[in-house]
Structure formats: C-alpha cells, structure tokens
Image 1 (cartoon, one colour):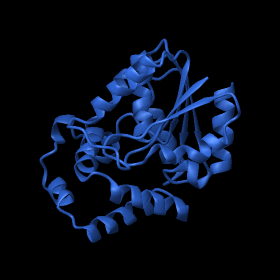
Image 2 (image 1 turned 90 degrees about the vertical axis):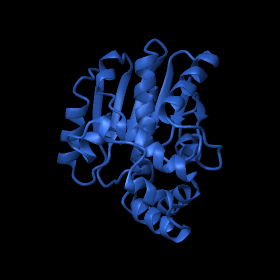
Image 3 (image 1 turned 180 degrees about the horizontal axis):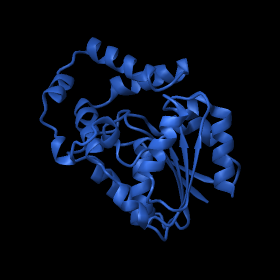
Image 4 (image 1 turned 45 degrees about the horizontal axis):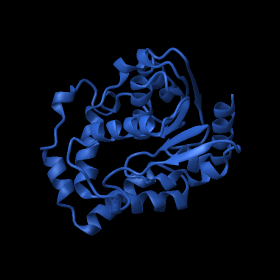
Amino acid sequence: MPVLFLPGFACPGSVWDETVNNLTPGFQAHLVTYAGFNGVSPIPMPWYPALKEALKQYIIDQQMQQVYIVGHSMGGNLATDLAAALPERVTKILLVDAIPCMRELMMPGVPAEGVGYEAPYNTQMLNMDENAIKQYANMMASNMTNNKTGKDSIMQWMVKADRKTFVYGYVDLLKLDLRSALPSIKADVLILGASFPSKEVVQANYEKQYAQLTKKQIVLANNSKHFIMYDEPTWFYAQTNTFLKK
C-alpha cells in the first residue's frame, strides 16, 4: 500500500525517517522534499500551486490507487488539497498539526488579497545576514518542538533554505484557505493536533476549521508542540500505525 509522506514548511522528506522506520511492514513509503529546500533547486512563484500539481501528477503517473497520505503542517494542506482533487484515489489522510486556513488564526479578518510578496517584512527577511537568520531560525524552532535534536535539525533546515522560497513560499501558505475544499474529500481523515498552547484552544480551532469535513477524527497529543513526531514519538507511531492499518 503506497503512503505519501509530505513534510512541513522548510523540512526535507527525511523528517519522516523515524516514522517510516516504525511503520508496520506492508507499506510502501514515498518521501518528498519540496523545491527550494534542503538543496533542491527553487522554482518560480507562486510556489504552493506548483507543488500541488506536481504531486497530483506524481500520484497519477505512478498509477497509485487507494493511496494514503501523511502530511505535517503545510504537508497536511497538500494532503487535504490532493484528497479533494483525487477523491477516488486518496483513501486516507493523516494530518499532523495542520490547519486549512492558517491566515485565519494568525491574521484574523485579513483576506487573501491582503497578503502579498511585496511587503516590508518580507524585504527585511530577504536581506537578513547569516547571523540574523540563524537567530530567527533558533527562535522559530524553539517554539516548534521540545526536542533538542529536533530543534537543531529544524533550525538548520530553515537556515539552509533558499531564501526567496522561505519568504515567498510562506506567503503562499498564508493566502491558502482550504475550507471550501473539505466537502469534496471522501477519504477517512485522522487529525493529530499538538497540545500547545492548550488542548482546549487547539480542539476548538480544529473543530471550527474542519467543520465541513465529515469523515474525521481529531486526537490531541498530551505534551507536544508543532512537531508531534519529535515530541511524542511513541504515541505518534502508534496512532499512525493504527490508522493506516485500520
């Protein structure tokens, strides 16, 4: 059974190595690294739609039927998009701390048109020197995991990323709103959420944003930030195997 593993923003496919090592035998893992990250050549903007189309074509070209997709963060967005676009092929998706409209949480009330590539913050990010980007990456990574080794990896991936992809690709994600695509999904969906900042807040956000998704189960980790596979690995592997085998 093919399982497509989609990483989060700035992360390579190797973020899933330990998850794949702990998979129940019988699954065929396909690991993806996005353009502009981990040494992969960048592509022109807009970036996210090109990734979606390339992955959609990959599933078709590989003649994948009954494909499962595991996606973390923006990988979960892509999993959602692909499940809506290929409802007869994608039969299960596991969304790991992924939300259909990140902008609604981070910038409430701001429409997609209000987010663009040309902005003072983006210019500042593009012009950061190596020391400044390392400090930024360290701060961001600290907020994403409690795991020291994981934090160091996340930080290095951010620093190594093609800068334009890192800045403008994130704009693409802020523009994204997949809530209207949810009714098109036929796949079974397991949503694993981090408990940070609190289970109550996270549960409410997921219930609201995934309201139009019918075949879903939401389960929250106990002591985890954004990278659940780093913070609660044993629990995460158990949840993943149980869902994929079911």
